[in-house]
Length: 532
Image 1 (cartoon, rainbow, N blue to C red):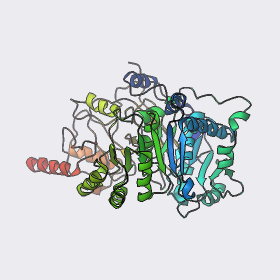
Image 2: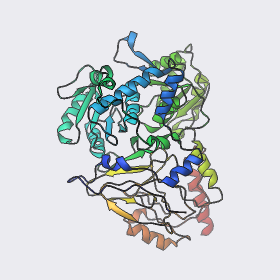
Image 3: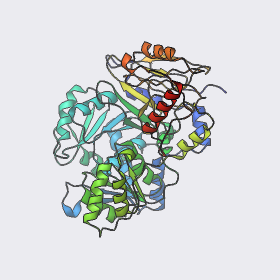
Image 4: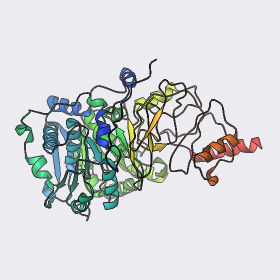
């Protein structure tokens, strides 16, 4: 079979900063053969969540799409409800507002917004206009915000005027002189400083869709395969990286067995990828309702869940503890969940699980696996040393910018310096490239790795404790001295070199795919003792 085609990286650079992210994103696409394979297997599709919203607006325009609680408003007007028709209209208006600011396809658009309806509409507007959404955690301060903006080089950044005792608008105004690529900064709220775009006036109240001379914006071609979201995936220090997702990679992460038309609530903001997937994209894809709360409050969340008839909730163990306590204080609230998900299954105690089950009818569990991920693992049965490779739910690419650091774009579709799972977390797996036509790589200041399909079984040598995660593949198990030498040559400190090599048919994992570390340690100890 012919080698899959891959995008060509731009050759022009900006002085002192390498290749800008916008130029890489414009032409970045998955390999054609990979896309056809995933489409044929039903993991990918030719439509996006934007089509689902427009379809919902046409079929049931008055159905509630978003319920948004905004704590800064008076009590009588804190909850805003948007129908599918209203959400579709605001999505189009926001997209034309981006166009009026000069945002073009491939341009990153950053927004550090809490969980409000404007956040969802802006995310969909980026997809509508072809821009790349860069959601930022609302709790990030000046240093972390600057790290994200320096990595993404957005043309526009949107922040609230005030949130939780801080002033993000003032913080962004102080950073703007150091960010020459930031053309506009927009502020959502009542206090907008000079030089900033008033979000409410420009995005919400101005009908840009009526004034565009060239007519309405057209949907981007092959929108399902374009990079749509850049999700923060690694540390915020010298090396900041983002996982670049397409609508298809996000869609492949959704569970196939979810109930259509239900309401979902997340205690975490949409900048968290699991929250974005399961409580924003998932409900909108299936004609359900997105329930948002901008400032976390357990009692307020309980009342919001009752009024919106929420059936699915995603929260951290600490937030589940607060919800369970609020439920015990207010037993008359009519809240009966069909699904309760926790961000940390290992950190959710059995006692907390019983409290949640008593109060809400179901115990908290790990997020469900996508059908694509389950099928990939089923296809790999019989290959005990299978390399954990990228799949339909993996990010299309990884972007990293760090002073003095070189990362790799591998042209043959093999993984580059980082291999991420479906949540955008770094792993040590690396696909085998030997014998692949067109194998090779070139170094760049900016890099991406095109996704591919699982490779044959292979031995892998992860190197913990290092800044750069690398893996070497062998056709047979290497002797321990050779393994130690290989790791030492790649900068692994002596204290981190393995004392021995233990071969296992498979790693012990939970139902959610997490590693059972204690069982692994016990198995290694037993095998080492028998060998001695």
